Image (cartoon, rainbow, N blue to C red; front, side, top):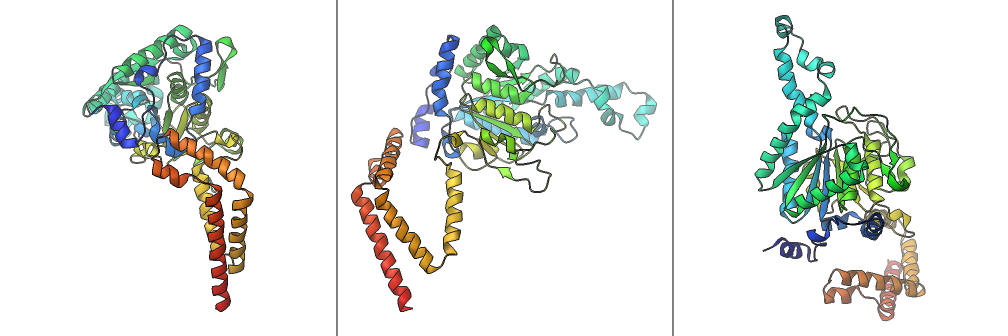
Length: 439
């Protein structure tokens, strides 16, 4: 059974377009703008739709795959993430990974060489020179050069356990800001994915200068606003936009976006984030092993969202984080711009409002509850035209996903159905009132 048949069986819906329709190698800038404007309409509006994401970009932060001592990788966490990405790949999805870890892997090797260069006095000293002085003695770019090959060998061995082939792609700022090299990069990624290979991308830290205080955005060719490539968060956002990914998952060492730094009292996790909430969030410091903090992640996420890519920021240390996100369950912070649509509420907010309303209803007196039912019954008739118009839209959406006819009949409303609902509500209200009077 092919991947398309498996997808139909699992999701009861045809998958998105085939790989051949994914990347478009020969497009002029105007065609690219028009194509992305069309894709802009397809951004997921709530978590339940994430299971339909076909092309994924998964970014692993340094804090996720690096040990606490910053020397070496957290193999258990990394193996779990590799397993989840491999399962997504085998299940028919197109996966791209953006990884950190070369510096940490290289530090582990260079620390051994540093130990060999110590004097006898330093070697016998109770002070651990290889750890306490690493920050000044080990050059990060040299560590990246030493560690990159070992990191890729580790990825290759892990993915091989699931029969998945990988490819290494190292990039720098110039690869994105130059039109020719950017086109070559996207063409290479297109070819790798068409061959059923998972590209693993990292910045070329051996030649990349240390992190600088760049602006969050820069002006590209034609005066277009381009996010500054200063860490792997911005790299992942750029790649996700260029390859027209359906979903970007940014994995960090925190549970998502908080209203203030998580260590501060009163910090609250934001399950659904919209761009207009940016000014109300206070950001803390970046992690000690990463080049970008939460501020950088939010800037990258909102930039990608504005270009038609759905984004989730989650805790990569949580077990089965990717599978949980892909199943549509609540994890991390989901980025959406549906708040810009008047009258629209995400499903999560509707559920929270319904729970709050039910608790409020329980606390009301019998007379107040009767008035609520009476008001709702009257609204079924007075708002009939509006209800039927919205129901017609629901029917069209259900037909697009090939909903069974019996279910469509149950979903469909008519004036007679609304009148029957009002009559039933009125009868229940009358019966309940008589019971209360008898008591």
